[in-house]
Length: 98
Image (tube, rainbow, N blue to C red):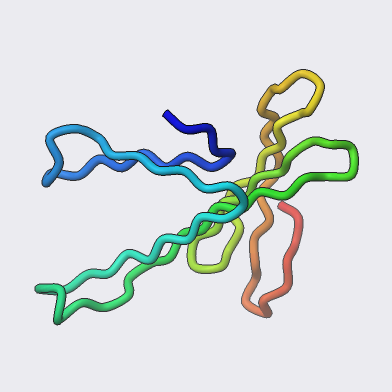
């Protein structure tokens, strides 16, 4: 398995086993629904981002349709995952701390 800060594991009924793939700084997935490849419509988008903080820690954010619903930091020193409060967007599209 390759070493990527963002790793995606996919399970689907069409695979005999899980599939996975990695990314370094951003992963963006658009899920389409419909009746076929020629009749499909965008349903949801999810994105995972990574940025290095000034102290060397790495912050990861998970967005669904442009709304950050989960945040976490991997500390440089302890290499531990620390969950943070998520940032949400209100009706006015302003980010607020939850």
